[in-house]
Image (cartoon, rainbow, N blue to C red; front, side, top):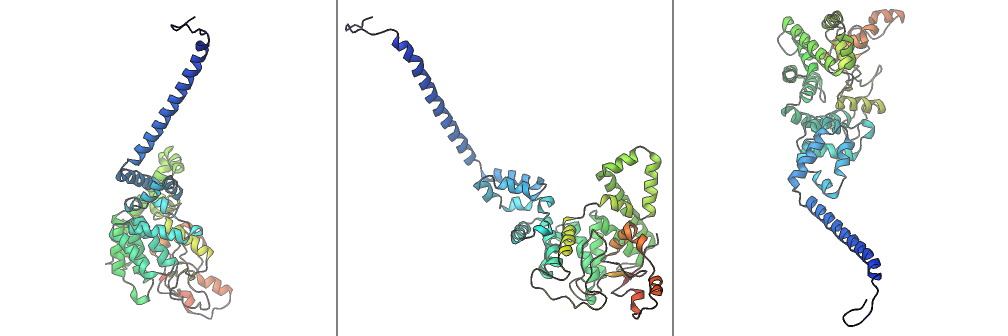
Length: 387
């Protein structure tokens, strides 16, 4: 074929070259479109307001089941790392995310809890307060953190302050304030703390810090039983399956529970201790009692017969801050408790089968040169409950 100027050309070559040219154009167009789309996505993320991202991170922190969940979200990008330090996010960190273990304790964990506490997180205030008061020896700052949590309505902090007031922890025997301890127990019990309710019931029965009333004390103990039973049925699937098949079995569980003042229900419902108590148990299991990690007044020298002691209730973990601070069992004189609630729980869970009157094994040893050991040495001796 010829052009208008008379030049000849082949009609087959363009047909072969045309598809290749079209393919190149399509490939180039697709690459340009992909680049534009990537730039648009990056621009959209950068244009998101900080308030929206802070709100998202706060929801993640509130629902985190472990510290790794929050750390994974914050380490996603540089912007998340910066916004993750916002007080709004730290104030909503969940208790599970704050539950540091004693073996993982470090300066970074301490700083993280301190930042959360400064942001107004009540759980962080309570946990760090317990660690400082009992483990690090910083009595003043620990009590202040627990007081800040108690002012915000944290029931565990209220009960812990009540135990401190009952025992005069961090001070002398004369620093005990029974009325303040009973008032703090009443406040914690009104917020649903079962141990505080039980403690207040025993205080009413014994006239300890309040006017004695056997009827009101027993009523509060029965209420504690009912709440523990409800918690056991709600949280334990095995208990639900065991009691759902037979009404008689359910009634038998109820009657046995009330006659034992709730101790068996506590064993089923309180299988996992609070993060603060679990930290204390692990801390003093790996360190000698009285060996704080920061400067603090040295504990009294251990006399013959033992020094500072831990509460005998396995899920408590509270230690003495001075010698003979806790009440000792007046029957055997072997176990000791920081509170009546711990004593009532441990009695049915373990100590009832182990408690032996002291005069029996003293007779077996022929004699005891220390006459005070029979009655129970300490600020007070606690008698075994007659259940």
